[in-house]
Each structure stands twice: as structure tokens, then as C-alpha cells.
Amino acid sequence: MNREPRARSLQGTAIAFALVWIGAAAPSHADEVQDAFRRAQEAFASVQRASEEHPSAAEEARARYREVADAFARLYTERGVCSAKLFVNAGNAYFFAGDLGRAALFYRRALVLDPREPKARAGLVAVRRRLPWRPPPSPGTDLLRALFFWHEGLSFAARRAAFAGTWLLAFVLLGLARRRRGFLWAAIPCALIASALLGSLAVSASAPPPERQGVILTSVQGRTGDGRSYSPSHSAPLPAGSEVEVLEERGGWLRVLLRDRSPAWVPASCVERLAPPGS
Image (cartoon, rainbow, N blue to C red; front, top):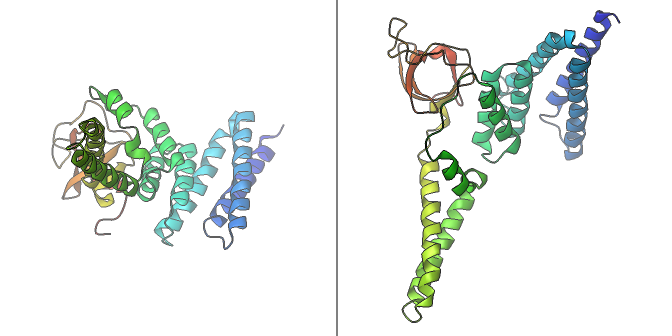
């Protein structure tokens, strides 16, 4: 078969995919939203099938995904559209375009708006697994995740309400324990649960604001100071998609903390924040 018709078909499918997804950003009726997303999923599947059936057109597919992703990004940067669904769609398109940096950025932006958004969380996990460098897990990380699986699964408001309820119940049971000692054994687990919820709330409240969180968009060698003359902070360049906390800005450089809490200085041009400073 001629490669040119395949490329044109792939391009046409992807452009239709882009137009459908963009149209889904702000429809006036719920039925239109559902229909637009259904057609977007069909178009997305068509692009995937074309890429699998014609590997030679894989680069063409990535280019079309990139166009779709950039169109989504412009809805945010130029038109001010801000929704978790938009950010997830942008993240997905950047992911299949091979841009892990911007994929992580938009997944993180989606999670700022909706910390329980499952597609954003799954997408971010997929990005992290593809990075050539990942922070080593701290001792006891798996145990903590097993014990506090609900920390990210419950909203801040739900955890706050649960804390208030369990704390109040613990006090009531302690009061009743003066008459019947058996209530004391019921008060203890309530107090422990309330303490765990309080710790979870404290962790969420102490998280840096979006303007102090960012993602490295282009692979860069971290430095121990604010200039290229300083020695490398890490043995390998920091890959695109690395999530950072911005601690300081100085002369076009940012001092950041990586996910493993190790520090580095990187050019500010290599990092995009989840929200603009001062927003």
C-alpha cells in the first residue's frame, strides 16, 4: 500500500480527534458532552490502531497527538479554561506524543483541581514509571501506603468531617467510660483513628501551593549552585517529567527539591509551575 494515503488517513483521523476533544471542552448540554467524548474515544482508538498496523506512521501519529495536546494547552493558557477533564485530556495527548514533561505537568494540574481524579493519578503513575531516573523508595514506604491508602482517596473535606466525628465520638465514649469501663476500649480505637486523620489533614495543609510546585519539561543537569559552573547535583541529568518543589528563584535559576527531597539548582526556563507565581 502507498504510505501517503495511510499518512493522510492518520492525519485526518487525528485532526478530527482534536476537533472533537476541543469541542468537548465547553459544550452547552450534557448530552453533547457525552457524545463528544464518545466520538473522541473512537477517534483515539482509530489513531492507536493506525499506529499499530502501520509502524512506519508512528512518528506521524506522535506529531498529530502533539498538535492535539498543544490545542488543549492553548485553551488553558490563552482562554483561561480550567478543568480537570481538560487537563487529563491534555496530559493523555502529550503522553502519547512522547512528551513526558508536559504530560506530568497537566496530570498534576488535574490533581490540584480534583485530587481523586483516577485518570490523572493513573497517568501520573505511568509517567513516573517511564522516567529513566526515579527516587528510591524510603524505608517503610510500602507499609505506610498500605496503612494510609485512604489519604489520597478521600477529599480534604471528607477527612475533616471524619476527624470531627471520630474525635467527638472518642470524647463521648471517654465520658461514658466513667460509668462503664467497657466504653474505654471503644474510645481508644476512635482516638487512634482521629489522630491518623489529623495527621493526614496536617500533611495536606502543609503541602506547597501550586505556584511552588512544578515539573521539569526538558532534561537538564542539576547543579549545586545557581550557575553552570557549579558541580552537578546528581550523577545523571534530571529527566523531563521530574516533579519538583520550588524553594527559591535567583538570577534565572531555581532551587528545587525533587521527590526524594534531594536539592538541585536548575534553569528556570526548564521548569513550568502548576500555577503562575502570584496566582
